[in-house]
Amino acid sequence: MARVCSSILFFILSHIFILLIAQVTSQPEFLNNFCENDRGNYTRNSTYEANLNHLLSTLPSQDGNDYGFYNLSYGNSSDKVYTIALCRGDAKPDACRSCLNDSTLLLPQRCRDQKEAVGWYDNCMLRYSNRSMFGIVETSQIFYMWSVQNVTDADGFYEKLRTLINQLKNQAAAGDSLRKFATGNDTTPEFKTIYALVQCTPDLSKEQCNNCLDSVFGYIPQCCGGKKGGRVIGPSCNVRYEDYLFYDSTANPPPTSPPTVSPPPPTSTNTTPTQGNESNTSRTVIIVAVSTSALFLVVLIISVCVFFGIKMAKKKEEKITNSNRSYILKDSLLDVITALENPLSDFVQRAPLVFENFLPKAIPYFPEESPFTFFTQRASKQPFAA
Image 1 (tube, one colour):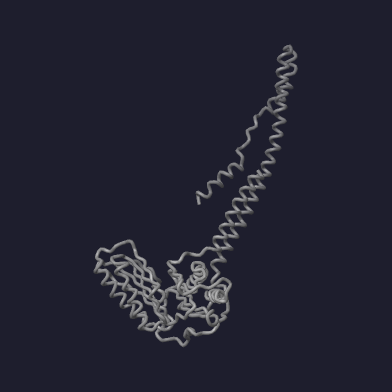
Image 2 (cartoon, rainbow, N blue to C red):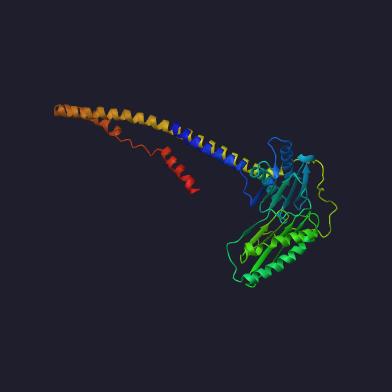
């Protein structure tokens, strides 16, 4: 019993440990990422790596702004690191910080030792480099995605899409230095609703944003022509359309007048913002929840093992008692046989004593089904039921 309990306990604890490690160390995968080898590499434990780690560790906790755009730098001379981060315009602040936190953890893993890298999630983009990227349109790091479903009238659908994107492009380009983002919808010739989203990094000028969106939309015919959905994504701007509502239509519109606070210029000096812990809230909740469940499960297993250990001990005593009864039964049967061998009068004289011992103690012992066996069977079925 003790060995079986120990085996079960070891099995459960090992799986709990693996689950905890997986929850702590895993991040969701990027939609895509680029590691720029031609921009140079840094060496491990170098000043550049220290500056990069410092910048990425402080980014998710930046007070920043509610529109999710960050332009930061840290270090000096050739060891200076620049970063630009952009959250999707309809992403809530908590979702933005969580996305950036995942990005800062995953991107250095995907692009080990590369001085320049960029990665995208649905809700955010992160870039870092050893050069200033502020106000520069990047068109070499572009990728696209498309739906596998086709529309019936491809030409009519594309015309409606182009008209919608042009309207949204003008709206986004007219945004201020905090957000250049627009969403909208239109009805296709098939009387279906098409939804679209466009966004530029707000460090671009109106003209730069227009040109960037024109450039990425130019990929739509070759990548996504006749498809019900598609995306073209780059570091400076992106376009997406679908035949379903994929953005938050209740997101706050961009401000009507430019705010008084602007993001730091690209030549900003070392920054040491206060580090917060909001970005780690979700991971902490997961760890606490798993730890609490694990503790409860361990206590439950120990309690069950102790309970059934005591019960099995009692059954041992009962077995011993019944074993004694079997000895009594054996002696009683011998008495019967002996009596049969003696004269009839002798048997009649001894019979009352024989059956007095025989009848009450000859009840066969049928032990109940082992409760531990039953528990093991239920426990073995539990993973399949889950």
